Image 1 (cartoon, rainbow, N blue to C red):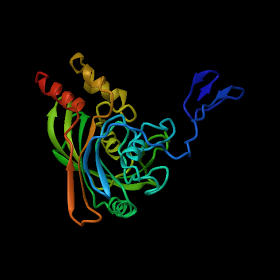
Image 2 (spheres, rainbow, N blue to C red; image 1 turned 135 degrees about the vertical axis):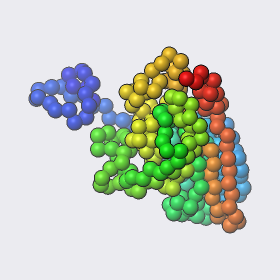
Image 3 (cartoon, one colour; image 1 turned 90 degrees about the horizontal axis):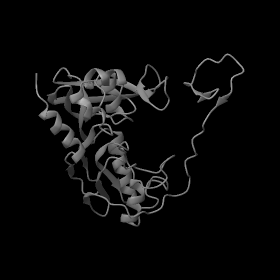
Image 4 (tube, rainbow, N blue to C red; image 1 turned 90 degrees about the vertical axis):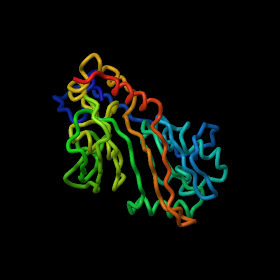
Amino acid sequence: MLVDGEPRKAGSRLAGGERVTVTVPPPVSRENPQPENLPLTILYEDSGLIVIDKPAGMVVHPAAGNPDGTLVNALLHHCRDLRGIGGELRPGIVHRLDQNTSGVLVAAKDELCHRELTVQFASHAIDREYLAVVYGRVRPDSGTFTSMLGRSPRDRKKMASVDRGGRRAVTHYRVQSRLPPVTVVAVTLETGRTHQIRVHFTEAGHPLVGDQVYGKKGIERQWAGAPEHAFLRDFPRQALHAGRLGFIHPRRGERLVFTAPPPVDMLELIRRLEELPRA
């Protein structure tokens, strides 16, 4: 929002007589997504489902600002007969990863698998583990964050722990290594709310390295202000990778677990941290 040509926050008090300019985002296209020949790293596939190692930067399904180039577009090309499974706009999708989160994701290729996988996610029967690099010295060595998560009353584009109207969110963590000024943590989700890991660690004072939405500049300056830590400020995305996904195969009834190693950017980030001199 601009007031007399200057940016102002929503909810700013006006004196009267100002000229207000509001930019309205383009509407989400209601057209069906089209197949696109995009590269996919496939960990597993059968007639009912497909498991992908999604790269950071890839959006899961078309939305405002991302009408194509998504995982859905790639799946429509690869699977051919995916259209309509679970809906025309998000065919096959039973869960999501943020655009700049990498890692394991499962999609359904028929209605039965879509329905049964959706039930497993809704009932929290899915095994999900992430690797995250967060600022600060996380204490204790393991713990749990529990809150009611909903839209932030201060910024509707963000999620936050709220007193009313939220949904229960539970995040378990264990410290893997402390590499000042950051901590590498393994995170398991009991629930899967939007931005859950990012919100819980930020609210605990440990925002994820590279998180452009929830990271606080003051905390970043506190933990990465030294010249030798400048590469942390330059990391281009939230340092979060979905490394493990386990579920019951809807047709076979057996438990399947899929893993994907951290991508090159996170491995390089951790390597550089490990090479820093210790006080």
